[in-house]
Image 1 (cartoon, rainbow, N blue to C red):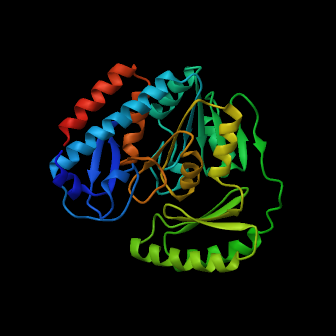
Image 2 (cartoon, rainbow, N blue to C red):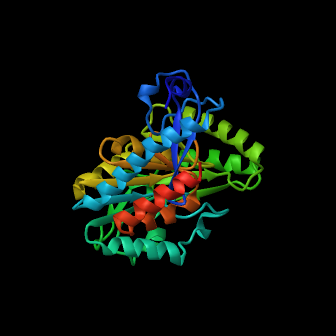
Image 3 (cartoon, helix red, strand yellow):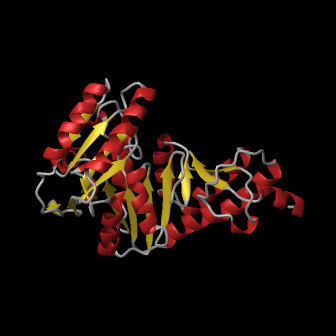
Amino acid sequence: MSGGTAAAAQEYVRYSWRLGEAKVACHIAALPFSILKPGTSLGSTLRITKSVVQFLAEVYIGQKAALLADYQAAQRRLLLLDYDGTLVPFQKLPSLAVPNNELLQVLAELSKDETNEITVISGRDNDTLQKWLGHLPVTLVAEHGAFIRYKNEDWQAQVSQSNEWKEKIRPLLKLFVTRCAGSFIEEKKNTIAWHYRNTDPDLGFVRSRELRNSLLQLTTNTALQVIDGNRVIEVRLIGIDKGATASKIFEHFSPDFSLCLGDDATDEDMFRILRDKGHTIKIGNGTTAAQYTLWSQSDVLPFLRRLLQPAASANSTTDSLLHSSL
């Protein structure tokens, strides 16, 4: 690649996997080309040449191959998988996001490999996770870490504090339900959330900003934190988050390979904690601490199925499809 093209490329690259295949989306920015890193997001939208895309794709192929090689060579693997927005698409109501047969099959096949430790880490309550996934030989994490069920063990509560704090939060959430048609409250043992996925998009966003600001003021100097998620505002205790829980799970299993997939703000805690310990992948667009990106939730199961294939087959198929997409 010519020096002029390299100079034109000068920074911002986003890597992604489309249906488990590598694909690169590139933009120009005013930083040295030498510091390119997957996941960098500088917001530039200037045109970039196909030769630059090809060059970056070649760089990416090496990284993709390294991930698959690490997976195949590992003696003890840990896969940390978010549920809503990652393993399953978002639904109008949380109760509708039931795992389908394809997802259950993929999780079952991955867990059959004794080298793999599969963990589904979710904001869901433990009763729901037990009902939907409890029959699988996997570790389950509920309410971002308030409850953990290690594989073939019973559920263990990780929080001993009272939930009286909800009495202060609930009235405010109810007020915003009346102010925003289609919104609703979801209450779990250790968290309470206001969902606005089913609202008018513009009104829902405006009300969510108002609620977030009100909650931040209400929870100042308390042991509570406000989470701005994917069309949901959630309140929970400080210290109960996916980052701390992922670290605990990692220490429990001591893997030599880890892979973490998630889609929203709550998963960024995991990405930051695990970035130097393994491979992290964000589902969807947006600024992220993750190393890589999958374009959409529909890409997740094909990607996980790729891990079940022999290394040579996975690499050759991925690389050939990558070049055909440029």
